[in-house]
Image 1 (cartoon, one colour):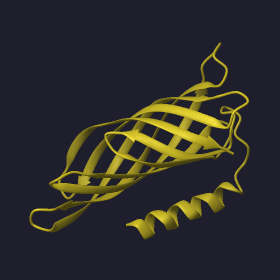
Image 2 (cartoon, one colour; image 1 turned 90 degrees about the vertical axis):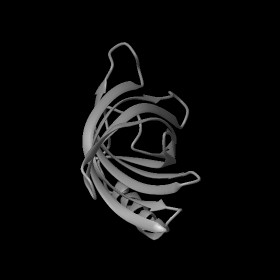
Image 3 (cartoon, rainbow, N blue to C red; image 1 turned 180 degrees about the horizontal axis):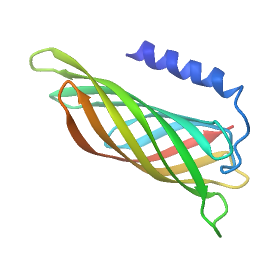
Image 4 (cartoon, rainbow, N blue to C red; image 1 turned 90 degrees about the horizontal axis):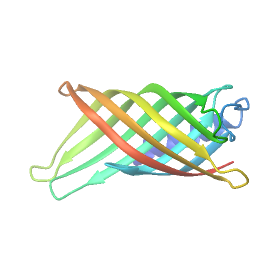
Length: 159
């Protein structure tokens, strides 16, 4: 899973070098951490005047289980009038992950469809971006269920 995550992030970084400038946001690329129910890394890159691709690699573990998940989201950004640097966004995507039951040493792979709704703020004059978002998930395999979502705070370095 770590090799897959590294390969995908490297591919996105190369792809980011060839994308067009983003107008709705004040940055083209951002990388950093995402903190919520699941903690991990996040990378955003501009696709068009008001859209971005976000990749999130999440990791979580407790005494009984450990999870690893990769989520890809297509996000549409809209500025909030009177608040420079602040945008609201929505979008959709998919996730793939694995869960390991530590008691019986069994693992399973799961796939899901995600939505996203959030706020994004870029500090003027500083290479820092913050976001607060909600990502609900409809898990399709191995069992179909709905996860009401992960609320997370993203803190990123922009470039």
